[in-house]
Image (cartoon, rainbow, N blue to C red; front, side, top):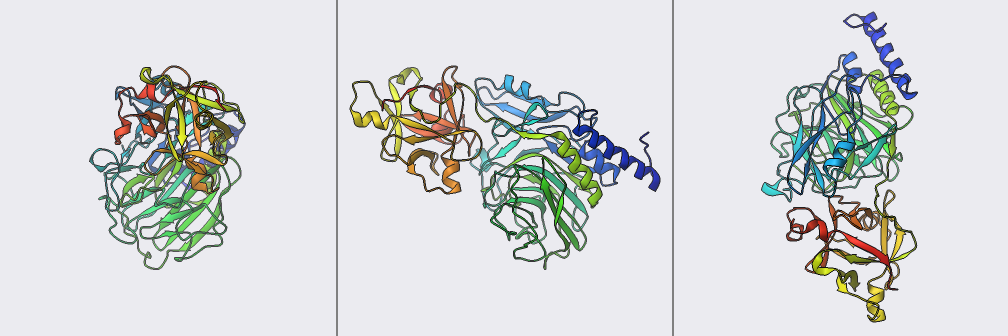
Amino acid sequence: MCVHGGGFLQRAVRHACLTILGVAAIYGSVVAAGPCDIYGSHDTPCIAAHSTTRALYAKYSGRLYQVRRDSDQATTDITTTSAGGVADSGHQDSFCARTTCVITVIYDQSGRDNHLTQAPPGGAASGPDAGGHDSLSSAIGAPVTLGDKKAYGVFISPNDGYRNNAAVGTASEDEAQGIYAVLDGTHYNSGCCFDYGNAERDNRDTGDGKMETIYFGDGGYQGSGTGPWVQADLENGIFSGSTAGKNDGNPTISSRFVTAAVKGKPGHYAIRGGDGASGTLSTFYSGDRPKGYEKMHKEGAILLGIGGDNSNRAQGTFYEGAMTSGYPSDEAEAEVQADIVGAKYAVASLTSGPRFTVGSHVSLRATTPCCTKRYVAHSGDAVRTEEVSSSSGDQLKREASWVVRAGLGPGDCLSFESVDAPGSFVRVSPEFRLVVGANDDTKEFREHATFCPQEGIGGTGSSLRSWKYPARYWRHFNNDMFAARNGGPMYFDAQWVYHEDVTYEVGDGFA
């Protein structure tokens, strides 16, 4: 029998019971204790628990996150399907059908109301949304399965960010804390800063040691190999070990799912990580804090996807995470890792709707009533729509034809190579225009040139979503082509006939 209460023997029995439950869950025989049940049993309770994929307590059956429908600004909460269960993704899919949705709130499951909402402007950057706020993440950018149940993570693109400057119960000054998160090991960059954890309350860099967060990316002081790495953002320094330099004991992450952990107490901190789908955690660093950070000055806000001063050029994907009161033991983290592995995270398809055949030549015809004779074409690097027919010249026919390629970037999405300019692909420019450019085989190009087809938002055909900016779709606007957001800040993001403008009928190529 599992027992409750204090005392060394009772705690030992309780820990053993939780471990047995976690292992049994891997084989589907019982519901596991959640990560925050485990931390609590080790006397380091969660003071914030965030996940869009599942409950982090075995008895939690409440709200996980909120989505907003762009067509009418209505919102709905996504809950678990059962106590301790997975998110009700079916409700989201139904609510967001034939339109687009963004994640507006990531609810705190700890009972402290440490919810994460749209991040305000800060000392380093303002976001593109009203009042300088950061963008909100697409609700469908990061589908996964847990067991055989679909759920969605939080896909952070550059300019996206979430924050709570009024968090309660978080560590302040040099108090001990722990943080863990499950992330996508293939989604990262070197921009500042894909963080989750404790930060300043005024959105400004107020000095060394004011933060203590997980950082994931290939920036910072780095570890061995080419990255990405799990590191710690302590403000004015993203550290992989004891110094402002490389830590060869901090390895490059190669797994699709990553469990990351950072924990600190007076004079000491640790960085740990592992594969979020199998195995155990490893310690990448555990020891003295870097020079200048011997005594921390944490302020206690909580952020996701940005730096403490709202540096918002990073990208990454967050599935779940929590922050604790007190310094978690390695034993507690081992049990949490077993629970994460038992959740059975797995990759889900990023595509839907009519199938494209890789290697085929296609044309893309606009479906907006004004423009049904116009096709996506290019002249040089400029992509726009042109009237094309069987009687058009050979040059225009080539410019309006595209070779479907397997996506240059991550996932099972696609890239579109110009028939007229072999080796050149449609990509998103820094101004969110669609342009054609030669493939330089950089990570940045591959990501900008990858698009995920889905059932046409306008009710027919297909819509093409940017992998890198999943809230943005191919849109024709005044005959020019953009990666446009439904009601976003750019003039070409206007909501009028948005659904029709982002929907295309796919046919055989003209050439």
